Amino acid sequence: MIAGAARALPASASVPALTPIRQHGFTLLELLAVIAIIAVIVTFASLSIGNRALDDRLEAESKRIEQLLRLAEDEADLKGIAIGLAFTVDGYRFLIADSRSKWVDYAQSGLFRSRPLLQPFVAELRIEGRLIPPISAKDEAEADAKPASDDHEESDEATTVKPQVLLLPGGQMTPFTLDLKAPNYPVSMRIEGDLLGRIKRERRTVEKAAAR
Image (cartoon, rainbow, N blue to C red; front, side, top):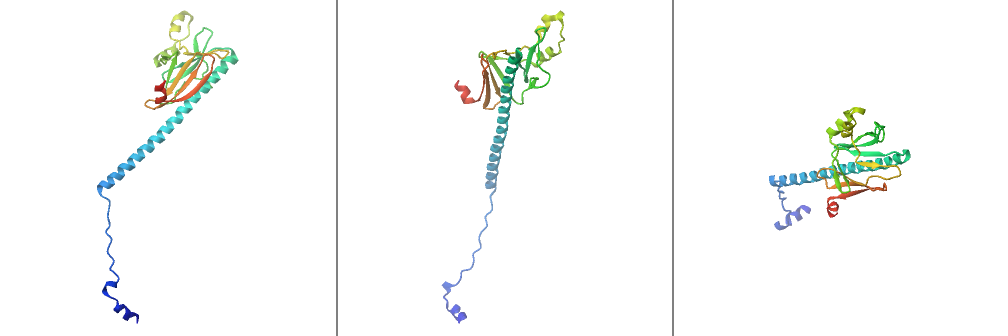
């Protein structure tokens, strides 16, 4: 019965044969386009990660300088002494006047030891709007190597590392502006101190700096 019914079906009602599906592959141009897109994505991701790491270090370094300045203020007030701060080409030093009124390092270790700036940051110090050049490595080395001698007071004075900022008892300090920045990076951190010893730190961008 079923076999007879199958034979009675018209030719148009028969099950069509399966048509093979044509497989398409990627052309060379398509592959190159995909590779280019992946390369762009990877580049932007790498830049984002790198900038984030640099930004975190900039934030940490500026915060460290701010905190050390506040601690040096407290130290000067507590001990009734003047503490100097001098910026060199690759770091900064806390200074104190010795018995001969020559400026020497406040400490060889501990909080107020000489410190390098984290790479690749540079510090730009301004006092009364004037850019103060950092102490050169040559002058710094000569001052450190010069032996103390009462017979050469004038020579000693010429080779002494002198402070650019003074922190005085009672909370007063030399008004200053310090910009911590990295080459070709659009963000910097500014630390400011006024005559009354008030210190503030702020984040700055190229657009914000240009507007002032």
